[in-house]
Length: 295
Image (cartoon, rainbow, N blue to C red; front, side, top):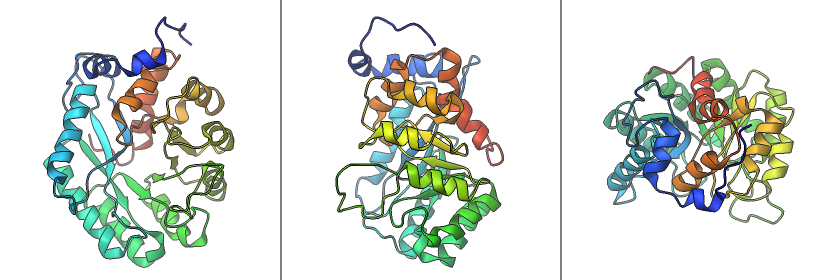
């Protein structure tokens, strides 16, 4: 590991987007859609575009791409979620159609996750096949409609295994009730799902999204096919370092989940060597997507 720099995590998080881009991309900020000068690709594994029920969706989507430019992020792995959940089949199909249109509009910048509600059964499975086989989506996005170990989720997991794509699963572990998310999964659930399906490639979302991140990291210790994304607004000292030590650098994926400054800052501030940061920032995700990555 690199020696600690004489600069606090708080001050790193407050530095400009231009400086962040230079360090993330290994070159000038506003790097554009592809890295240059031998710089490694930077992939945000957890991003969202906006539902078209939002009158400003086009402007907000454009702002996200502009922010990625400034931060030196080359690819954003995105989903669009329905505003109200549980999602209906018509609802998630519309979201995925809009995402496919956005991926075409932002060529080489946006990769798609197919969002589905497992409760919809065959309609969910058919939508995953359509999005991966016909639209080139790179994975599946599951939210909190059902806990991931519920039997109704099994056909979705088995379809993702068959197609060779990962599942990014919303997760969080809190020591207090979450009335709005009664079916939220946590790291323990994802670890159990990984044990049931060792062929699956699972991504546990936002270690820094609130709740007990230390518990989450420890829960995933022995689940070797479950990756952890670094997104979330929590930027506690030592979080990324602990995840790297317990899980290994190769199981960490850079993500922002729309908290762009926090997402960038916690990687910049992490006391890890340059190669480890390159792997977290894009190398690991690129390898995870090797069977579907068309770049």
